Length: 432
Image (tube, rainbow, N blue to C red; front, side, top):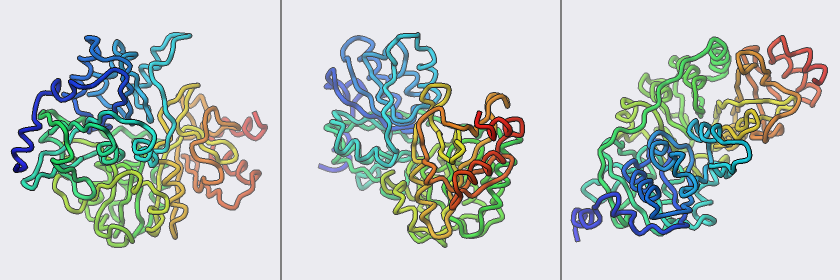
C-alpha cells in the first residue's frame, strides 16, 4: 500500500477517530500550540452528551483550544485534568472554585524533563491526540512546534490520533512521525494559537540591561517565558556567535538568529543549529520555523537534561521566579496559597548552566509584586522550593545582581537584602 493509500485509509472525522474511547481512560494531548481543536472538540462533545466519563486528561500548558473545549467548567468531572503546568486557564478555573469544593484541576508535580518517562513508564495512556504538520511524499509528518513529551507519548499510547493542520510548521530535528505509526487521521485547517510579546515595565528594563551585560560573545542561551527574556534578547543584537539551546523557542530568540547574532558555531552539541523542545509565538515566527534546517527540535528529556546542557560552554540560563528567601531558595510556581504554574524546566537549566564551563544561571525578578506592596525577597518562602538554595547561582533585581556561590547564609542574606526594595530592607534585616 502506498503512503497516500495508507493516509486515506486512516482519514476520517474527529468523532470517528475517537469513537472507541471508553470511560475511565487515560488520555494525553499535545501542549500549547499543538492542541488539536477538532479532536478536542469531539472529545468535549462526547463528554457533554454523557458518552464518556472520568476521562483522565494529562498535559502541560493549555491554551485557547483546550479552554474552549475540554476545559470548559461544565465538563470538569467527566473530564478530569491531570495538569503538570498551570496556565492562566487553570488559574481562572481554580479561582472560581467555591470554599469546600473539590478542586476541578489535579496538579501533578513533575519536572518537564521527566514527563516523557512518566508517559513511558507510569501513565497507562489509552490515547494521545496532537496536531502535526502535513505528510511529505515519503510518508513523514512532524510534531511541529511541540516535541516536548509528545514524541514519547505518541509512541507509548495504545492509540495515536493526529490532526493534520497545514498551518503547523514542518520542523527539523528528532521530530519525525511516520504514517505507519498513526492509527487515525483528521484534517483541520485552523490558525495556530499565537502569543503576543508582553510589554516591559521600567523595572524589567533595568533587570534586562543588567543581565545583558553578563552575556558575552559565544554564549549559549536559554531564555524562559515572559517579557523579561524578550527584553534581554533585544539588547544582544550586537553580540557575535551566540548559540541557542533552550526549552522554549520564541520570536525574541529567532530575531537574534535573523540579525546574525546567533550562529551556533561555538556550540559543542548540534553545532550550527538552534535546539529547542517547544515553540510559541506569532504567525511570522511559525513561518520562520517552517522547513528551516537551522532549527533542531528534540524531546524534552534530551533538551532539558542538565548533563546534555552542560556539554556546551558558556551556557547562560535566564529564568524568572516569584519569591527568593534569604538563603537563596526560589519559589517559582506557587502564589497566594495556590499553585500558580509549575516547576517546568527551571531547575534543569539552573543545573545545566552552572555545570557548563564558563556558564551562568541567572534567576531574575522585580523586587516587589502587587504594585510594590509585597516584597519578592522574603525571610521564608510561601510555597514549594523550585530551585534549592544549593543550586541558585546569580540573582538579579532592578537593584543589582549578586553571585551566591561560595557565600555563607549570613553573606547571602545581606546580599539579597541589598537587592530588595528599600522600603522592605529594614524589616528583612530584622527577620520580619
